[in-house]
Image 1 (cartoon, rainbow, N blue to C red):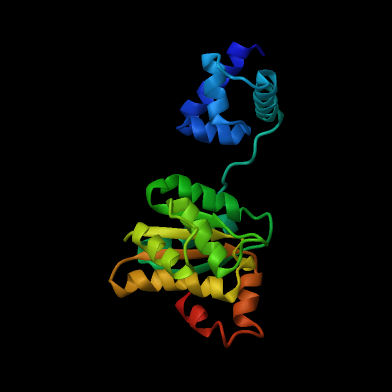
Image 2: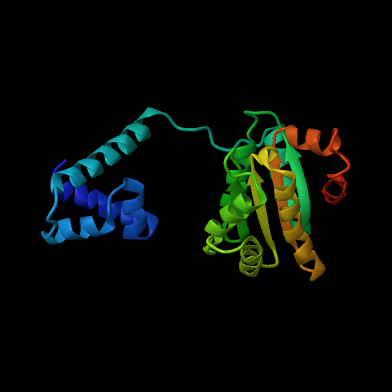
Length: 227
């Protein structure tokens, strides 16, 4: 593609994601570099930046023509996940829904967020983000809260950004530590103490229930009673 075509594609991406900084982050270039290229004042290797644009859009174009993921299908397990989240959202409090790998849990979460975009927050645990502080950081990033603050301050900042009638969904929740689960439960309990409804739904494989109902049941008793 020519320079003009690449810059046009970039501008289309900006319109799609909402800002030049976000678009530049996706592509892996500097937003200021793009601005300077447009104005003709870029003093470094312009071709290197344009090459990054070209490779990015080539990958995206190839992805469009390769395959299409299966959309949410309300089969028994994915429907159970969706309705559990829905009930948790309506009633507030704490909920757990489990299912084996590949049964549509994440698709159900994505569909629920799509259907309730304004008042749904979704985070995904992973092996590097499973502790209480890591989970708070994931929530903080979703809510635009600074992560460079003490854990207790971050908790209060997050709570101040959330509000009555919301639901927080955690995917891959079987990875969460006990303290992370307790921290999430405390958020739901906080809103309940003010007679408000904020739901927290943990979605994952059966490892969640095994931990709560198995050998460590005693320390999870309060969590289990809430769920």
